[in-house]
Length: 81
Image (cartoon, rainbow, N blue to C red; front, top):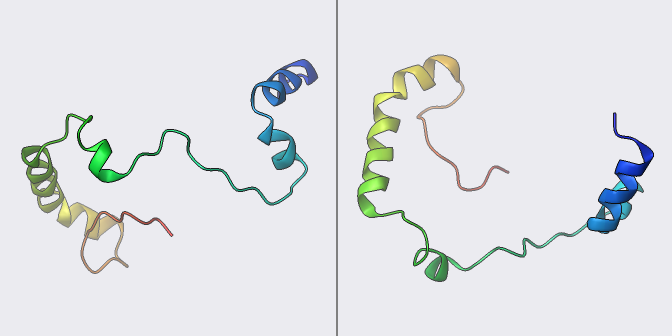
């Protein structure tokens, strides 16, 4: 449990918390978001990394099917909703 002082400190640092704590609707835009074309230039992710991840998905597909039987085939979703 947080103390009242800790909460006040967080609210001062993150004013949007006040709205959240009041259970009001909130829209938050990630200030560190960048378009893919810009972001891909600054991250160390390359085609080889993607291919290796794809191979891991294939290798663990039987385990995924066993633990998540409702999935027809294991996939990585870019949209969790």
